[in-house]
Image 1 (tube, rainbow, N blue to C red):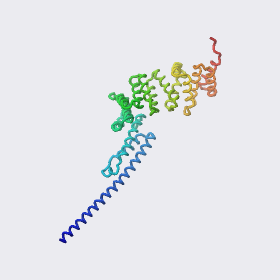
Image 2: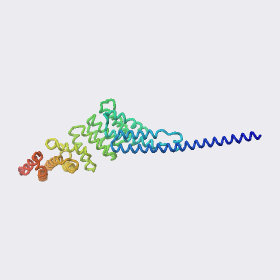
Image 3: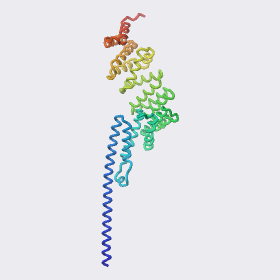
Length: 359
């Protein structure tokens, strides 16, 4: 019938219109999702850049917040956004950046705004633990080792329920020569057991791969300095000399600490004898030269090291070189009426200019 054919056409057109509307809606949603995805990708990129810049400047709390915002922005994906690829790569990059920041923050031990080391550790352990569940090999061992260091910071703050060495052992089981696990474990051995031979084995393992060598040296020197024994002092000095011999830069902390030891050695013969016995004389002289040539060391401190150098030359049976060194030091300090080094130089020059008694 004509009426039925007319009604069928109407329904067909209605179906077509509905399909077009549905298609238009789908296109709109697709374009909207693409735009939203681009915007979220832009925000993530900006927050990642901010976090990296703030981390490089040492402003860790701000960097932490920036990486968290990047992770949060990348975290929510709708169905269409997922079909378009989503932000899973960006989300993982933000998490990795936050894990890296957590490890660096722990190594530097910067508690801010009245925060205790225990509170800092509590703030950072979450990303470390989460990262371990999705990583393997050296990366997993790095995260495990830093989790142990976080426990150490809590221990140092008075929490005796934590066991840093358990985390270190797990990390070494994953990666036997992991630099962080081994140097943190050596630090713990010296802190808790005062066993230099055991710690030395861990230091050797930490240095085996040459990875993160500057960090290893930093914690090695700190651990040895904490022990405060004659053997540890000698090991500390040997470590510095090993670094110098292998072309590893001595940071400002190490150089200032070395100067402090020479300062006390100048007027304490026992301290000086122990220092000179720790490493061969020629290597001792090279360490002293390193300090003297350090541009940031104040002139009066360099003069102190030069005085110790003169005594070292004499102790190495180089009497003439020692006499020359004292004369050069007097030329630098002689015009200063109150200079104790000038007075010391005059006494030493007079003594050395006397002919040694015949045996």
